[in-house]
Image (cartoon, rainbow, N blue to C red; front, side, top):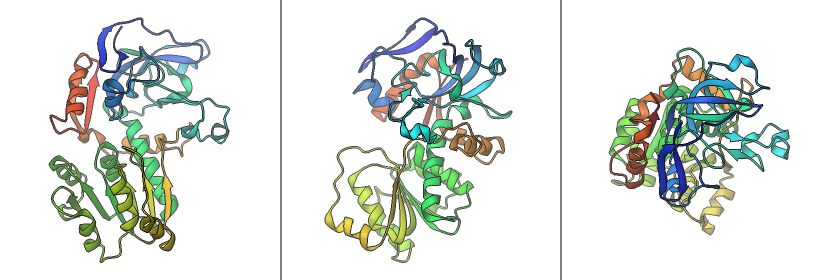
Length: 353
């Protein structure tokens, strides 16, 4: 088969390699679509992965074309989405079915071979059958959508009914835009979003955000903008989707007394917290939560099933955020666009035809 193989940082080539043979508890998935995640960029060009050589890519979907000896034959020929985290099954979080917090996990596309290929071997337990009408491109966005839903549900757990709450999102990359989409779907009406690209304004407009509820932080003081629109009080629920010191501090400063904060953005560097900001957490009795990955337990109430239902019912349309579609053999073009930021993009998708 053909696959993009990362030999070392900044050394990834599209080449012939051996087609994987599924183990007894695995299936072989013919990859139909694979999205590039922001985390794939440093992995491909700077830091490398946990092992080399490796096929990266963890946002993908496809069709089951072979089953291991212990796999239920029902999977043969099924269109599937794939949860990329492979839990150990024995640690404390795994015993509670909190697989996203597994202490000793494997991971498709960063610790073992992933989806930038024609075929991938995937554990049966990591499969999610796609309902009729859900496309492979939509399914290749299940992972970032589930991450967004996981963050949203964290916010709901902290803040309760958010349909009447003032909610803010700072950071409109893929996760921030998908979070915007799901919050609108959940009935949030008073939603303020802060970004730093012209294209982001267009995307949030398509998601139903009025122009006056979008702030371009390059052009105005976003903190002052948000406080003005919340009558100097701040928001009830704040999603920080950037991962920088300044936006973490703004999340605290712009939250209303008794408000809630969900930290979503992966950190760019070490975090420091000034004394005055810490005091605001205490004195305003803020509820603060981190969020990581998404819940996939196989039950109907996990994040992935939430997303699939929303797709099947036509409530959300993540494909609107696909800005580039490339044949798999041209995927390096997409990786380079994201590395060099030569074009506006949200989700760049590689497809096997």
